Amino acid sequence: MKNLEVNAIENGIVIDHIPANALFKVMRILSLENITNRITFGTNLPSSRMGTKAIIKVSNMSLDKANLDKIAIFAPNAYVSHIQNYKVVAKHKIEVPDNFEGSIMCANPMCVTNKEVVRTKFQIINKVDLAFRSFYCEKITMLDNFEIREG
Image (cartoon, rainbow, N blue to C red; front, side):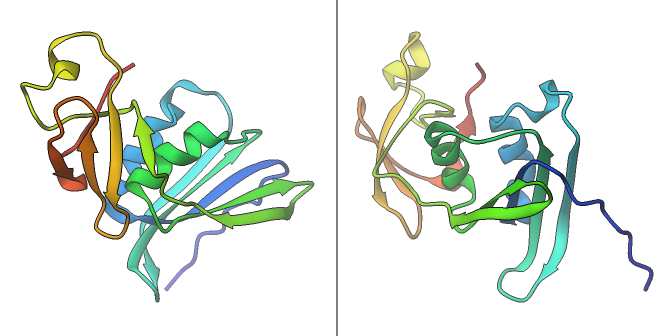
């Protein structure tokens, strides 16, 4: 098998151990389609821990807590490495927050957040299976039933 080499990044982030089926959700949440930084990504890569995984490398980017929380919703076991001068200066596991606002739509079509311009709010009631309770309609929804909210 022939291997393709990917250049290291001088400064930026690497998000690893993303579930393969969540790669494009994470990219969309971070609006990577709108930036001009160098981006390298791969999906369905072999992983002894996950079976298959995805990875994203973005040069000259950092992540704040809000972005880390967004990633955690779709990639709760991912790791983020911060790169400076081609070296990993920090690496940490993403943690699922207790509460979450924005970026995902409530699965209940009657929820006020789907009828009016209201920011979604959820309490995470199960961090392992990722179950969410809407702050407004109290519907409990599993991750597979969420859609990413535009804007």
